[in-house]
Image 1 (spheres, helix red, strand yellow):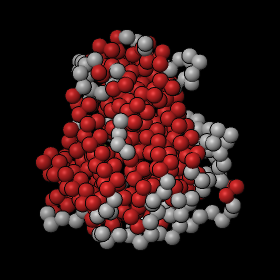
Image 2: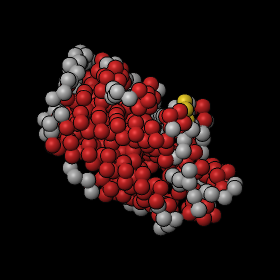
Image 3: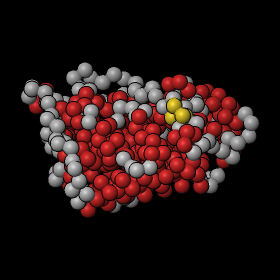
Image 4: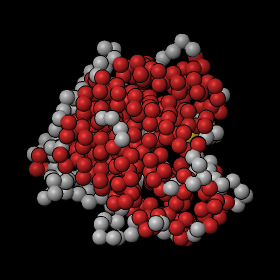
Length: 393
């Protein structure tokens, strides 16, 4: 059927088909250096009853809506872990030190322009939520740093592959230092992250993070080597999205729980949370490529199509405007393709259906937290579900 058919009500929930594709992709996965001191975690002084409770389905009693404000009772997730995030920058600078000044400068280029540290925040909050609110310990903090290093390495490599000129409003590393140095800087970060990971001395965690790197590479290969017919397949888009974006969030959340020695159902819950949150994050990112400005995005608008990529809004729009399909299969290579598709997406239901898809995954992420005890950290993870849907950059 068409992409729109996949989301039409058929006696099941509107988004179940896409969720089944995402779940199927994720189910294929297999399940002492100097460390930072554990930060003292300040928690709210009121009782557990003040936190979001579960409903009769044993899900957190909260409904996530696209572009809706989060309930005022939910804590700021970034402020909650700020005592542990603050030393992360200086710690990473120390960890990626190298005798080669140019390599060091290229490796540090990403961290100098880092945003809110979304992925380390996920690791720290997952650690705390699985422990009923107790803050992440030193090993879990180190995992947060490792996660950020892997993310940075992937972006250094992506910018070379995509021939990107800017990221976050600044010149990319390869534009400053050249392709070879940028690639080597990414390799160096992966090597240093692997060394730090091995020093955690947890085989399961090492396997999970090694799987992350494998998935990210496979996702990139899916993007650059896709056959024309695959570019039209929603399943291909979802699988690539999981591998390139959601796998790091999903498996690092799970790894944080394993490092804390918490029950398997807690680990699986945070794995599912990270998977669905990551997919929602990327779908919103794909929408912003159509609606954002170069200034707000830190990169050119419509850059996905300019790189030959068809994302959720375009795939949904192709159901209403079949002429888009030919332009997708030729990767928008002819003059006028990008402008034409952009106009047709605006006329279609592509953005609305993409918003529904992102919202369904954000809600699934929230629902996955039902097995965890109510806590301030769990509430902060719930807040992230709203924040992902409210992204503007």
